Image (cartoon, protein in one colour):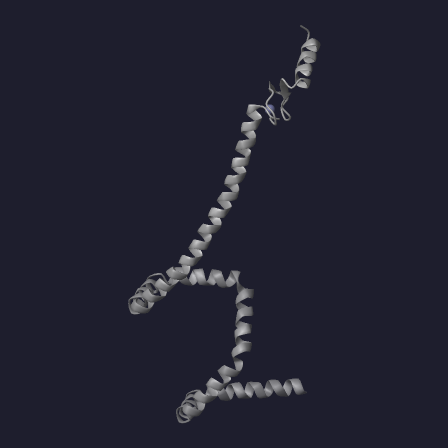
Length: 182
Ligand SMILES: [Zn+2]
């Protein structure tokens, strides 16, 4: 039987609904109503569908896990806050000890952080300054008024101790002014 003859027979059987050609791979299989794919392709399709389903499911599971973690994070944070409130003396002592022992490492880390985040930090400081200027001024005024005598005494003491330095400074400022106004 030639290939052509064979194909002719197959074609005839397909027309007679004895055989079907798989729509995806050209495998030939016994005719079953509504069946358009060979077993392999059918299995592959089911697997693909299952994979897809599992992917979808995985997303759902991950979302649920995230949600759970978020819910628990609040609980965990509350627990941490409570622990801190109850143990803050111990924690602070620990922190001081750690800081004393790792001062160099910590300052290096802070320096690095500041260098890397200079713009962010400056912007934050500017914002804080703008938002709290009045408050800070009022606080300083209040403090000054409350401690007027102490502040005056401090000023007098400072002036007495730094008289020469300040006079030199004043003279320098005076001469600088004179120079720029000329
Ligand atoms: Zn197939």
